Image 1 (spheres, helix red, strand yellow):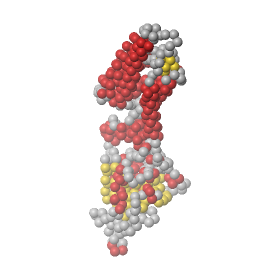
Image 2 (tube, helix red, strand yellow; image 1 turned 180 degrees about the vertical axis):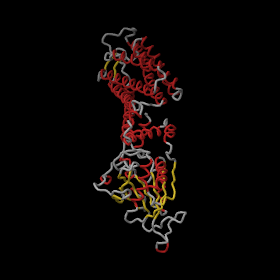
Image 3 (cartoon, one colour; image 1 turned 90 degrees about the horizontal axis):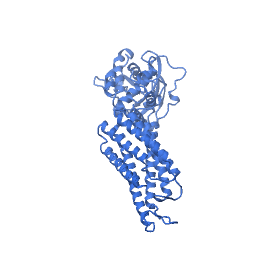
Length: 527
């Protein structure tokens, strides 16, 4: 480097380092402070590129530094003038900066010689630093692409990413400038005592210390490994789902009973999906939608071991004067209306590795052990073909009541007409609807009571209250996607803000529980 360039490098490097550290310290500051610091850092970095403070070399593409410098100045100017820009815009600026910087580093490294080369300013350039440039540049490109998958970065994350970039880029620029100063001085003193005059045929022995070159390669390699790990995690978050697809059990036969609440088929559940000592079945049965159309629904039944005495309700349930000895062996039913699991067929609770561990069903094992039979409807569209009417009360009520009816046809079980409905969240909403419709829809059932935990009862105020939370955005996406398929007059593009329809469709394909829930929440965070 020339003396002026070295001084500029020290100044630019120190400013970038200072701004980067400030952003790391003030990551939780106000949006205006963070954006203005980022703008200042980008402007300084762009100016440094235009001033040529990067280490020179015959292989460096000067035009690339100019293009990148102008781009950084433009990004900084936009951020400074448009300090109220939404996070999506800032994320795109950040992604562009990381990708452009990374590509520039890769191009410059590939233009460098692959063998040690004597540079006029710095002496031999080890090949390991060429590798370090490629690795570091690739890491920057990968991180930049990842930002595009998370466009609604929180302000704190934006500050941390830009802060780290400015800190490390500034430190590299500063050290490079200081190293260039020391190298120039050593060259001057080594040229036969004649400052500024190199003796003919002399090649200064100014090779960079191998340890430092190797350290740069290791540092860049670790950065690339971290970036690839983040990329793998992003792919897993967006695509991981270990749940089974519905098999032939969930496909209705050509001929099914015409009335609701009839058992179509049943089969014992695998032992590893049933709590120890209990008996479990998955069932397929008939029901009707809220509009009266016939449907086929799946569900599960959990029963205590043979010989377990039935539970006795407070009103004398369990006593039956017509039974031998005056005591009935018929068991009462705890009908579980499950909470949100998703809105597509593979999100059915009966397909989960642990079908009885969700929401209100979490205590089902203990309840069944005490002489109840647990019946859980998957709801139409979960397990069986959809659409699933998410938070459509009449559909859920009919599915819950008809599951109890169908369970009475299972061989080896004797169920009484006594039923308690128990639901949480979406299931709480369904449980309340079940209590309202049971007297008319299933009068033969003796509904002892309804327990609704955190029911999604008043949907509009509920949606307004949780719309800013990630969970609220996820539920809102489920409602929008489900209702546009369930109600013919709705169009998703009319319910969702422009640019977010694709995200809603992606959330629609994720279940709310199990490993897939992480992806659902991650995508919902970008709404």
